[in-house]
Length: 297
Image (tube, rainbow, N blue to C red; front, side, top):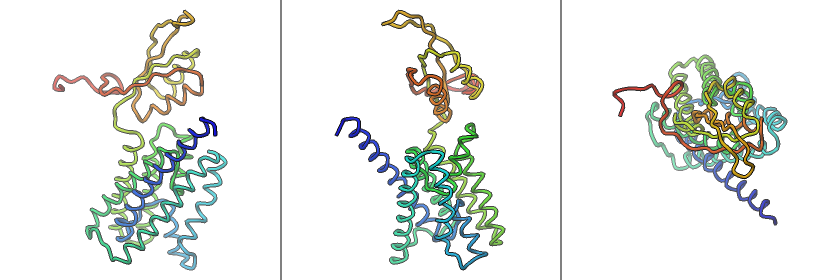
């Protein structure tokens, strides 16, 4: 076995292992906090439950599977086999874990809390953390996760968490109408909001930024796209290649963590051979970042 192939297997194993940890956290949130109190977290599960309300002869689990199949096929066509493998892994493991945990809860009659608000908060936080870990490793838990991944291709300026809020809030509002219970709808809304916040934090990090130096043979094209597509500033730093002696214009730019993946994508699309030096910037003052303040130490 070559070193490259061995390294690829190791990386894949690590990725699947981290996704499995995320699936465990996700499953705990659903099985121990949301399901026992009937709090709908949105997604395809919520849609399936509502369909089952009108057509009780169709099993909810079957509906979830049927709704997921076309989305997974579309995901395979758009994102490739690696995406499908990751999604199936995350979806199957999280579903089996939820099922297993529910059996344990029923057998031992476990009730961690009777407080509905605490259940909504804890369940949402755990769901968001688990989904964030799975998304960071390139997978999804199926359902609306795949829809969000599609929408992110078109609306890159929107965070995944924002798209989740839009989709899940619509489902939550619909469930409140279907079941005629505004309290359950509001609790589900709390879950969605908390889940989205934690998901964004896990996936994108804090509001700190990345300072990036880009050495490329296509500096003008890269800077043009950074300005037009991301609306972030950039500066040229004059440099010289030590080996070739050729003059270079090095791009220096600061981008918030949530924007940085798009910076990398633009650079890669314009010049796959570009050299990037990336460092964390704890504090940046100026347009788009912090405002100068005399009271700040």
